[in-house]
Image (cartoon, rainbow, N blue to C red; front, side):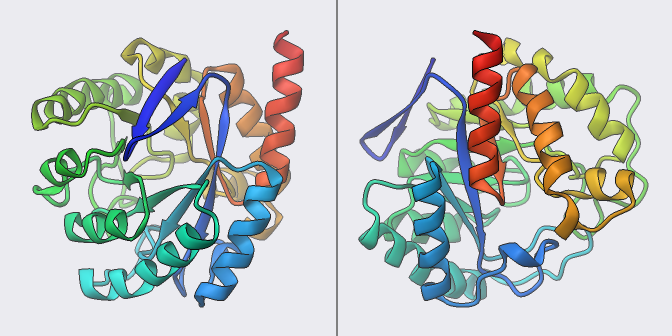
Length: 275
């Protein structure tokens, strides 16, 4: 069981939970996740919460391979009104801000977010770890090789599981020294990894349990699924369910997904199977 202090509210993870993805972007890789207005995002938030999501992950910067970089002001302009609206209408929801900019994280937490989800694990903005410590919120520390613009340009590892594990051991200590108490780890499927690397990480996912931190699996509709199957991201829901099932069996605590209802059913069935 893990207990996360989210700005004074306790999030208890004693069984797998779901994080629903809401992208305030025009260019995220899965078109179904893109919301252009606060009203559209509110409707999605309501549906996800009704379907069982515990966390809503709000992002204003696409981080698909080769995505266009936007500055902090534009990112804040996209996400802050949405976070304020969701926080006001659904005060019971735990909101995470998906950003690698410390200033965006700060504004988002002030607006109602209570978790910071950084795809770079604090590597792209050197002031991120101190900012999160000052905000006193949990930190999703993700492994990424390179940047979203370069990460899929022939990533190479001698041993992908060992290198990702070593990164977490090092970065968790940096987080601790900065003053961050609650850390969630995300191996970063698709962030500077080939399809083979992703399948290796999924197969060896239980290795990361030794870190004694909640383990987030973010593989929903990603290219590992749709390229392997020769389909599109729009057709990758069934494949997502298959890989989420494997992830749960190998120790995942949080499923980050576009499709909450199906993820909740997956958790329910895997739980029944394990019992």
